[in-house]
Length: 434
Ligand SMILES: Cc1cc2nc3c(=O)[nH]c(=O)nc-3n(C[C@H](O)[C@H](O)[C@H](O)COP(=O)(O)OP(=O)(O)OC[C@H]3O[C@@H](n4cnc5c(N)ncnc54)[C@H](O)[C@@H]3O)c2cc1C
Image (cartoon, rainbow, N blue to C red; front, side, top):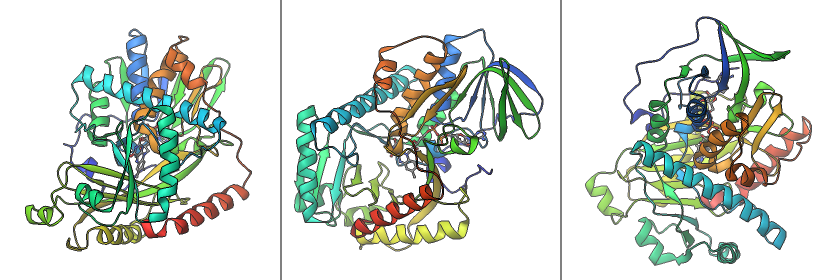
């Protein structure tokens, strides 16, 4: 299994490269092993380090820590999402359960950045759910009804008002929600690496090949060495299935995104000098598009079942061309060649969009599957699984465990066929807003 990524992600390239990188070279024994060093694994390690200061904790990643999806996302810390299905009261209840988890996620990140004084370009500007299609107003009015029932501050906007805010006349209707935050995902995850407690030992570029359990010891085989541990947390998100974790409940999806260089003063004036904003699509497969504080435009408009997980340069270039078209449709006055980087990232999904947060066997824990909410929920779940695995309880764990549980997936080849067909159908429905 290959877990390496392309090295063309602007969020990563904005940061000073790290130097203190160690990979696993000799056999180790430990109390705690965490596999995966994204928001989830880093948060689990931080919390375990605080709870168990005298125990040996090892955190391992197949690539450089934080350089998986946690540095490759669009940077929306969400309070609400649109594409979850909610019309009856029962669904309203389910929606509330999800929103409660998102809210805990936002609070967890707020606490983290306040405690460690993290600069991650935090902007509480909310976000827009926007569409170029006037008829999508109906969907947004329904959504507005749900948000009103749950007490979320929001407002509907139309053509001219929207163009002034976004600097593009592409969108006809949007719903703005106030509670979401935009941030720099790479800076956030880097801060989580920098503050790892001293009893956490981080090994990078070290792929877990296979693992098993013998009596009370969990043994893990890596290329150059093995680790024996008493307890383990799997925090590999898009790679849970390939490690055999809850494999009947989750599957990987590959996303791609592109980011432009900063617009020049003149280019920025030509689009009306909008403040930083973030747009999410009304139809699930439409484009996520964001104007950053430093005037770069980010676009993500693909989600697919891609095998192998790592995307070739040729495949990525094809997606990048579509992203260039997506930017051009919205900002025809900007030059053609302003995309600075394109990248892919792997996330994990479940059938009913519910998350995994579980003890899967004695001393074995797994977390993941956050869909588009992994910044907040991954950080929350990482901390809380560490608390659960240390045999403690919190009110956050009660809220998390009260969520709907992931439902069983159909067997292969029906799974891949079903997911591919659904994605193609959703892409067709959203084609005007790609
Ligand atoms: C393009 C894109 C846009 C997104 N936009 C948003 C957004 O705006 N807001 C939001 O909240 N979420 C968004 N997401 C999702 C979000 O990035 C993820 O949910 C989040 O990063 C999950 O964090 P994690 O730590 O669980 O997983 P990851 O960051 O994926 O970390 C898992 C780690 O496990 C490692 N690993 C895997 N297999 C092994 C192995 N065998 N051995 C050792 N290590 C292994 C990987 O190298 C990786 O570093 C987006 C994702 C993508 C790709």
